[in-house]
Length: 151
Image 1: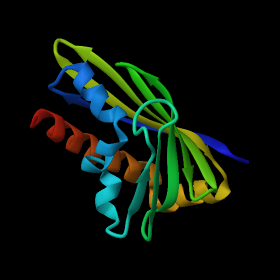
Image 2 (image 1 turned 45 degrees about the vertical axis):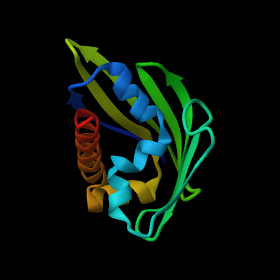
Image 3 (image 1 turned 180 degrees about the horizontal axis):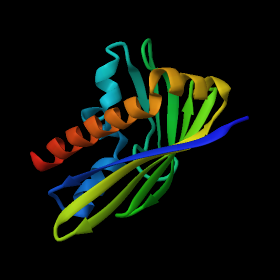
Image 4 (image 1 turned 45 degrees about the horizontal axis):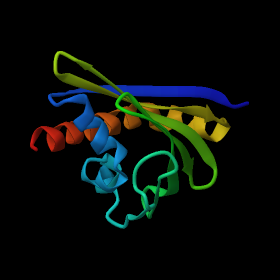
């Protein structure tokens, strides 16, 4: 029986909300900060044209991280971007960037949620998948922060 899961990680970025949103919305900039690009040197990616906005797609294939795609389904400037995730044609998930700004500091929350079948539940129990993904998300948001704040 599938069970729901979700995880989220947040990072504060010292930049205007529109600047942060524009980087997140542009899939051409994803590999500059995504933790998954650095994990797999064999990674080959394809980015749709246009590379931003609803309907844009980032697809990947790598020996370590497998294959999949993310299709942007929501693009509400400057507060939210959402993707339908497809992992290896088997698992699906929802990924979102939720963006807020307070006193000139922009907070990005990276959310991932879906349902896991028995195999996914077992992998999570054995390999602490959620903990590993939360660390990957934190690393990615840290790289996003450095990328944006260095501009």
